[in-house]
Amino acid sequence: MPDDYNLLNLGGLTSLVTNVNVSLWGNEILFECIYDPTRERLPYTIVFHDCRDISWEVFHPEDVQDPEADLIGIHLGEDAHRKAALIHTDIFEISILYGSFSIHKGEDLNSELGELEIEVLQSQAQAVL
Image (cartoon, rainbow, N blue to C red; front, top):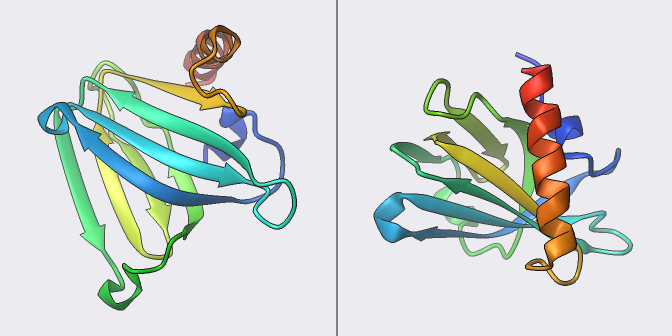
């Protein structure tokens, strides 16, 4: 199963997960991430909407106090609840059956430009999948 990190159009460097927010009783999951952690530390978020099934495994309970988890792999699955996304870090792994996802990049993660990037990214991801 190939990794879908390149579909996020972030570049070739690694990312860290700095926070995971579960809201709307698990119907929405937001991952706060940092790209290029050794230099610019550019923030971005990945949000999964209309979540129906979440499976979460903590590999190393002794590391849960760490402020950042290394993103090892991401598989976007298929939206419309067809195939679960999988996010794998050095501390945890989470599987999410979701309706749609979005990515917000840059300093102002809620900007309209970021929303346009999301729509383009989703179109590209659907074309590849």
